[in-house]
Amino acid sequence: MAGNSHGHGNNPAAWTCVIIILLGFTVGAVFMVMAEPLGVVAGLVVIVLGVVVGLVMNAMGLGEPKAVREGRPQPAEEGPDTGSDRIVVTARD
Image (cartoon, rainbow, N blue to C red):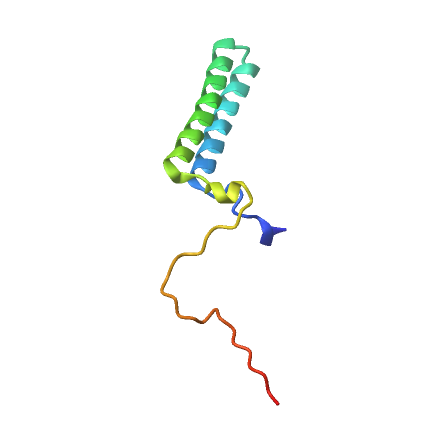
């Protein structure tokens, strides 16, 4: 399974989004135990901010490439054509 991960979540946008969301969840949970509604709302705001930051970073190109998200193979990098990818079959008598 590890060999077939397709780079899932392995980019700066995803990591930043998740870290900010975890911080917001932690803030909200701490203030919920303390029975402070304003702190819980602040935690929810941080969670929403984490989602927005993740989307903005993805739009800036720091997320997963669109081809990977859609399950399409990424194009290979263009290089000089060496002809090494061609197979020549000859007939023998």
